Image (cartoon, rainbow, N blue to C red; front, side):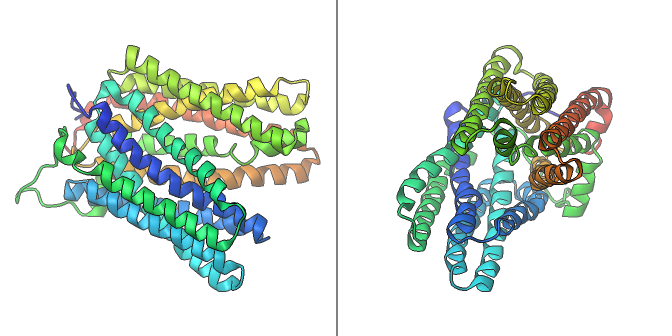
Length: 443
């Protein structure tokens, strides 16, 4: 049963854990964005190669429940966070080496890249899952909206800082520079993690300590997974995460092409449009952080309110983009994209905050397993979302011979997914309130 926390991890502690997300994001952006671009542009390789590698790194994250369960059994998250970051850093450096090798030995480079992106996926899964489980354990209800916003923004900060700094040092480009810059970023990220994570788990209060003793032997992974899956809220939330993140990720790879093909925006203008979406995303996150903490951050229910609101608003704004596809340049594209970002930010913080709160419901020693289960659902959704979004546009354009209508249909499909996610979130709230016995059946 979920416990009410009177005190929790202070803001300094939350910032320290957020810095781990910054470190994680700095390595991920190099492997999924910078190295992706190098393969396609500088090495003139087919775009499907980095696409498959990024998909592999998402697929490997199906291991997240295993990592979460391991940290549940040990009762400590710190070793898993550090170990995961070590694997992630190794994967990032290996990915740079593989990219350099691709220029001269294609097959060997591909094999090394597969190994590297496997390490990246394992590292993200181990460190990311256990970090969120630790946050769920130590952050009290009142601070969850703001904490979820802060940690997300610090990860985005890792993207931005690394992209800007690494981009500066990568010019003029060479394979040696790529390896040097990547190795430097990975080393800094790992050392930063060691510094900021030190003693957090030892000095902060643990609200849901894992029961120990000879009368309660460790639960095997498969049994622990079945027990968590048997919890109605955990099961429903897994489905919600998959559906909502599928809708959320499907737009990533089609928004800029849509702006270029339908509205005639130049590459620079479409990049600026992405900045408009990011601005809306930030505004939505900050809005939920402030309003959620001031007015409704005392229970998970208020976070569900923002989650449902964000899903409904995202659905509505995607309908606007579908209409924009049919109308073309007269439509106010930038305000529509900003509104989409605002809705997405509202949804994202509500969902992450709810995830942190719901991780403590049910069996009180399974926060890591729940976070792992939901993280695996998110990873699969992100891997599928980008592919289905782009493939859907290609197929509908081929069948209908109309790019405007093709994009409108895909945006409409995303709107339906977000609407379905809102209904799932409402059902989740009903399940949490009307089935309390089931929630504590395994406590």
